[in-house]
Length: 311
Image (cartoon, rainbow, N blue to C red; front, top):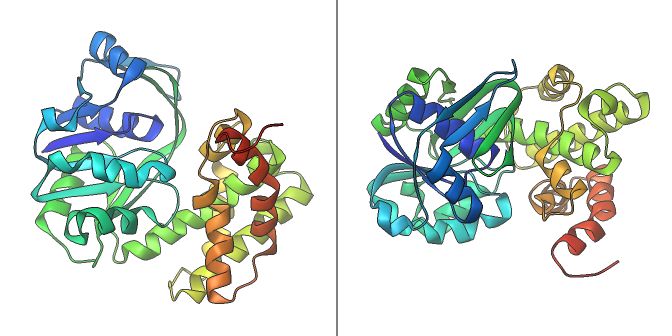
């Protein structure tokens, strides 16, 4: 397959690296120092066992120079999705599909509004990965897994081709019976961890072991599950317990990307996570006091990161 990676951060960089390593025709879209590093030195990935590998890759800045591709994996932050969807238009052919891998549940619909639903998959992934320098990704933990599918849950050849490409690259890939349910199960996990970890500034090992913050994790998760039910998303009855199991399996020093962005003063995905839970809760009449508190507590830091206020 001819695959473009738009957004070469931890997620896009890692999965693109695996696909390119397996022989797929992959081109990375980047700019600035990241683009320079990719062109000059290739893409370096550190693995949890302490090993590193560098791969020579194709990298471009302008999507128009790439032309039509079979698939675009969208690895930008959730708040950059609409801009990215406009930027990738030159790579979209009649059967091209975009696979958004953002944290949250809005990215697929955001892309569909711009490019049309026929060009969009629902998607999510499980991995702890981050960009530690231009052209340098660290896979910090969690077995990489990617889940995707057509928005109408139909089984298509293009979805199966991508699943095969990931499988050939040694990545656990799955097309679920209901992609919306799968996206909400991931949202339940990431919104819970990100919110509590960001407001406490503590890693996974701490927030899950301190009794007060563990209760907070469970409470946030229950609110997300209740909102999903209010939206007629048929989550597994054990969804909250499954989420806590995932959090318990994370590396003790593991952190969420939203947490890292907030702690380091960068714009974050707060609006797509804690605020999204609160917003959807209001729309469905489901109380979300913990998620609302987390959003409210972090909002001044988000505003400062975006240059809206100073302190």
